[in-house]
Image (cartoon, rainbow, N blue to C red; front, side, top):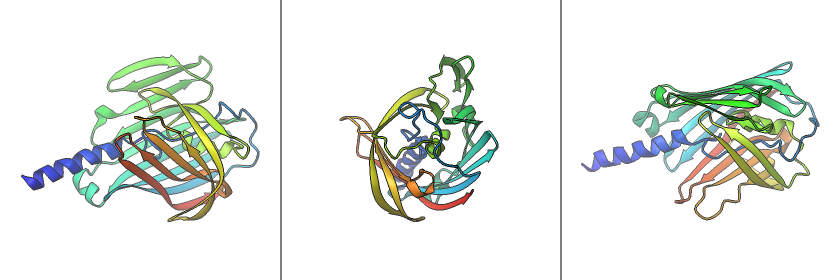
Amino acid sequence: MRSVDITRRYGQRCMIIFNFQFNYICLKKIEAACFGLLFSAVSYAQPDSVQATYDVHKSALRVEITDSYARDKDHYTLSSIWKPVGLLAALLPEKIVINSAGIIGKQGLKPQHFTHKRERDSNRNSRAEFDWAGKQLTLSSHGQQSQVELPPDTQDRLSAMYQFMFLPLHNAATLDFHMTDGSKLDSYHYALTHQRTIKVPAGEYQTIYLDSQAKPGESRTEIWLATQYYNLPCKMVITEANGDQFTQVLSKLEIRP
């Protein structure tokens, strides 16, 4: 009975990890972009291609995330593949594929289509369609569809992580934005601290540190952006209200200008 209980406990933890919104990182509260404060033009050229690999872990449970960003003139595509590693792969061999596509404007990424698909549980798939002209966001999840007003600063959970590349954050003190995971639309607020140095498997980086400043009983999200690499996220930590902590770190980065 003990081995059965342990397996069930691990199975529950597995599902928690795969519900994690982040963006990345993992992805429950992510982490993400900011139009609200800084509606200004891009201050430097962004790369045409980014390949990033992240390790996500909670205790002995691990997930590997492989992100791909590509730019073709004024359009972008993003994909993120989540795969369990080690014990988690044995208990829950499920792959998650997240995609985002849209246009690139003066304020950066402007999503048009977003999908979140689970390999073994299609009932939990979600998608979002962005109608910028009509200012409407269409959400689809659990077999139901709804429409809500589309705020001008909205990103999806994947594009939010790469929108940082397009924002001049060096003088910012706070960030505010909206983000959708295909099932709902939420607002986010972060306080920024500059010139933080951290070391992750991919290397040592000078960073901008984002803190969601959670109130008691709320989960807290912390994000570190690598300033010498287009403000790409190199670390994220999500601490749930019960003390459980998920950590996502950059393990490999390839950039093509």
